[in-house]
Length: 186
Image (cartoon, rainbow, N blue to C red; front, side, top):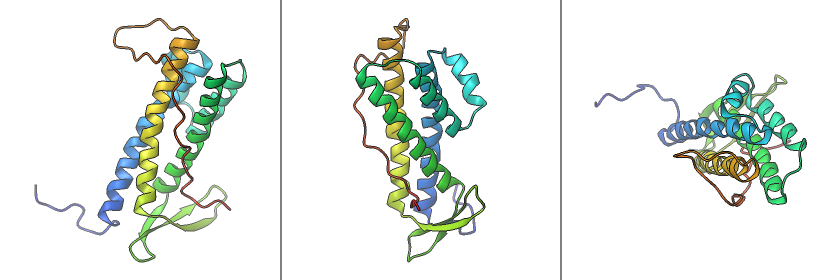
């Protein structure tokens, strides 16, 4: 196929590609919300799916935090869960700033993002292709971390019955670097 789509300018092609990768990686990362709800709440995955489908990512982070606070955890697991929740909030905020913003080329070839916040204030902030790619990479890194952490909690703390094909993690995963917010804080 040789047709160029779209025939109009959306944004720099590399920026559009990075936004697509970021969104795909974020959807994968959202899957860990289900697993962490199940792990911290000691729910079945099916129960956590129903729960997750009816809540937004910020509410899910709040529930994971509430489930976490209602029991005692081994020190390494407790640190990892708190770290995951903090990263979840940053990654979700970064994703929302990018996906709900209007990307325009400004400042030379760097993208600028016009974004409307929940208070009705329109703001513009600079971004960069490297920043957008970093957000995409953070979502992938925390997909892997959330998967490992949830499986560690399920098998080593809740003693979930191991099943054929199940990922078994015997040690609490190492904490990845905490993501950086893409949007300037005021």
